Amino acid sequence: MSSLLRQGFLPKHTNEIFCNWQNNGDLDVVTATGEKARKKSFYIAYEYFKKENKKVTFNLK
Image 1 (cartoon, helix red, strand yellow):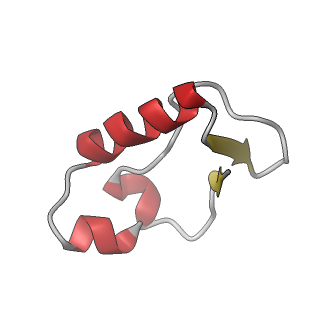
Image 2 (tube, one colour; image 1 turned 180 degrees about the vertical axis):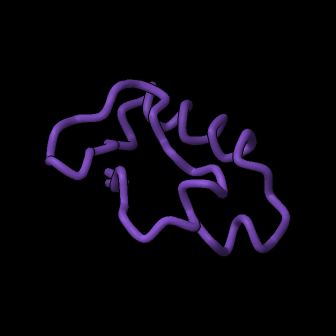
C-alpha cells in the first residue's frame, strides 16, 4: 500500500477499485481478529499506513 501512496495515488481511487473487487467477490478483507470486515472498511488512508499495527489484511481470489 505504501507504494501507491508514494506514487501519488489518492486513497479514494484505491477505495473505488477495492469496492468493485469486493462487490464482485474478488477481494476479501479480514480484520486483525480474523473476522470478515464490513463492506468498504479498507483503512488505507495515510493515518492508518503510518501506524505499526494492521487493522485489516487483503486476500485476492
